[in-house]
Figure 1 (cartoon, rainbow, N blue to C red):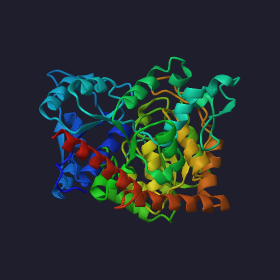
Figure 2 (cartoon, protein in one colour):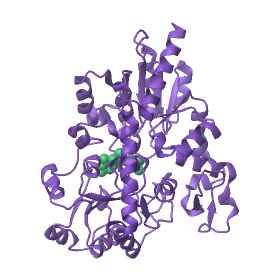
Figure 3 (cartoon, protein in one colour):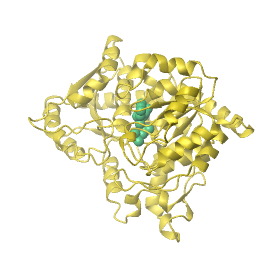
Figure 4 (cartoon, rainbow, N blue to C red):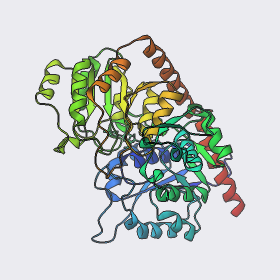
Length: 472
Ligand code: UDP
């Protein structure tokens, strides 16, 4: 790197809520570890959730800081907890952000596309913008080709499968599995995000080249995207405290929980977590609980805050039985997901296929039971099962919106079959585990000095430096 060049200043403006805020904070920390002066812009409430990690980074000499926006008196902050959805309105942040950016002119702002009003503000202030959409190349390519070729328009029913044209692999989906806003001809939401990407300096992607090489190439060459693949961003959490506190404070007694895990055999525990947002069919928890008892598998199940819903409760006596038999742990709130996934006793991850959860599973070499629910998760499932071959599908068929009625119940028999298939240890699973471990090695190498993501992060910093020199 050119030590004579001025330091690059990057501002990061994450969305509120788990699946988008968490990775962007990791990305900001990652760029700071590469020497870029990084400032994270958040609400005062969000700042509290990760300030300890930032303090630790500062103590290690990384040039990183948090700027908490001062909201107008009486304004309601859009960040009640980690469950914000893409439609959460963040416009209240506009004026305080404008004030900050008028006083500080960074070399770029990396912003989440869910702040739908923000691109216009940055253009008005003449600030170079880099998009973050929280997802990877594979789902981006699937989404683009569905939009472009509309294969879902050519099938006779919502449950007849169609091939997504033009992709490096044979990817089949049904209309019931693609987002409602894509099925809706106007495609209003999808087009909004695309517009930001098209008019920006480029995109920062939380992925690594070796995970999806054909799709990374397709993304750059066929779709014409300027993109830096800098992930998996979660690997910047090397400190145990960073992992334990990531997102928000975990709702468990860490010591007894870890002791429970330590007492289990390697690869014997199934971790069940469905991300930061609620969204299940009515009665689904009862089906999962029955399947777990029937499969006799040890498990950690993050039910989040969903049990409050009258429509989703556990079968009578279930919790007492699993406590007695030491078979399972239920987490009613936030789980320290990174700590759990990296524990040697965890041999399977039942996941909703959120992009971050998948990447975190990849980094730990944990095979998956895929259970997509919403967003781009049905596309992600195909990456895990059809492209990478490191998971089995539970058989989820119905895309559900965060707001709509809860449908798409998966029966206990299907859940039991998937759990036994992955956790039962047959020949198929030996190969799945081997591939998952190999992928974990590639993920870790990507962020090390000389790895593909390491090089990409440096490349962006260097490009910003040379632009800065040309202006000065
Ligand atoms: N997460 C966590 N503990 C929880 C629930 C979620 O640490 O109890 C983290 C998880 O590790 C991931 C993020 O929250 O980093 C969820 O992102 P993902 O893309 O998987 O799903 P989303 O919440 O956006 O649907």
